[in-house]
Image (cartoon, rainbow, N blue to C red):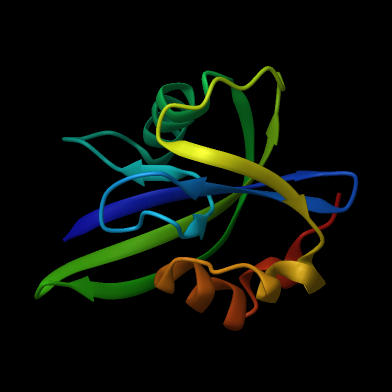
Length: 129
């Protein structure tokens, strides 16, 4: 099963989301992250993906939840971690926009289907800043 590791990055009561600019999720907002490669741990994957996508480092705090989903009959497991940025000088590579959003406002954004499931299942309810 493919593992997708994503970050719910928090700051001052808000969560960071980014809008994809290409691929099957173009136009959708998401918690940044990506697919684990080889024997990568979740932490190694998330740190690598955030560096590739945003050119920043982060501190991973706790697991907020996981969600199984399917795309084209392939099985995936998304794992969402609470994280804090160590640097905010983003350089976007796969996103066109970013936003800091209060949890209660996330429904106003067109989240990717699995990110939407994570929110609906209450994974962000444990977030405290």
